[in-house]
Length: 497
Ligand code: BES
Ligand code: MN
Ligand code: ZN
Image 1 (cartoon, helix red, strand yellow):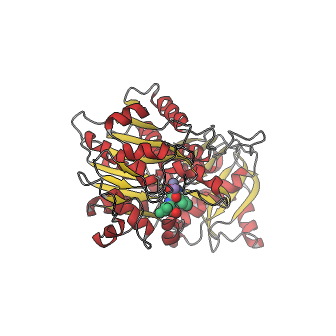
Image 2 (tube, protein in one colour):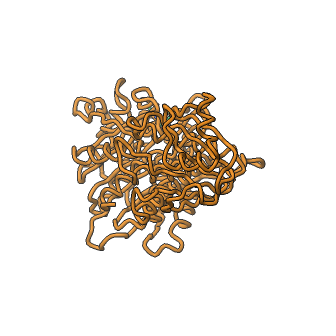
Image 3 (spheres, protein in one colour):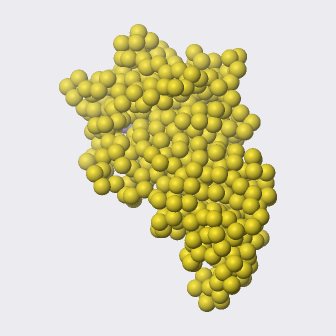
């Protein structure tokens, strides 16, 4: 995939610099940014003349393309609203509008002047990182199975002129971090968008090996079914019984920190297709269950981002990959399985398979003596009912971990909302024939699923992200790459970056 290359610069004579498109912030009430002022002079007043016509007023998200002036072949005016009210939401609109306008041109390079963009609720580094992340993400195209994919954006290079508002080194760092996060998001989207006949557990294992190639700090091992049997992962294996595709437990060990540092462990649900199994799902929208490895995809994406940033941190990523299918050999409702923890589970519904693979992965995570374990899963339709698509459901057995994740979500605009793990809900999982059932009595489906997982995560600080609503969108169909931005921000915070 081609990515836009970002370069930070400090240019005082904005109009003098050569570029195919100068991107100029303009505020309401005819207030021009410094760079826009300079281009107005270079164009003998063309910008002010355009404002006087009233077609463009500098409102947030508005854009106007003008013929070139000075060293620029084109001028793109981007509305930023009232400068005193320019906040992160306005900055996001600015980035979206800038991308949309540039995508409609043939410009191969652009120069964006940010000197007057002062965030009310953030620093210049946030703005630059968000800009690079947003444009990198917006330039993503799904191509794999299309003979005529959408054409890529022409823009190959963007120079960001901060006009000395921040040191060039710091600006470049922020841009680089944004690009890394954006590439991680795109990686997650791409994996999740792939159809289930291509993106199988075996394919995910190959992707892991590919990611580790040429990176001496990243070790990958793949546990095959035989090994999982030896470990007693009867719960995970019960999910794959009906499938022709072998399940894989993929372990990616990134050693960016000191050898003594305890790792952060990410655990991703990697159901490459969820038919529901014998508890077969209805036909409508069943295709979307190819996205049921969205948690795994976000683990891959996050790992991609942090390895590219070379974060000085130890991170273990575990992907529990399997396909959930019906067949004569498939697990049946009422079957009782024994998990790696020793707990027995009555499989009351084979469609509640995510928790069955995750519980064994969570037990396996104990061996890494983790600082914290975070699992990420498209776990329940009930979470979509509760929170819709805007918030990821967050559960945690430690308040500090919950707060850190919530803060990372707010900062990266990849938001989560905390949900309860009360014992009252746990009682809903009682079974007459096993230590617990894999579904709860009606009500609070996302919570009872989390309570199920909590029972396998008692030996460490743990959080669970239910991304059933946030990981993909149905119209238009496609993966969102969430919560890569949240997780990357969380790990950057831990690394002090
Ligand atoms: N992968 C689904 C959850 C899901 C459903 C995600 C819809 C996104 C959209 C999960 O494996 C599942 O089937 N969960 C069941 C659990 C139920 C049987 C207790 C559900 O949510 O219906
Ligand atoms: Mn299911
Ligand atoms: Zn599922």
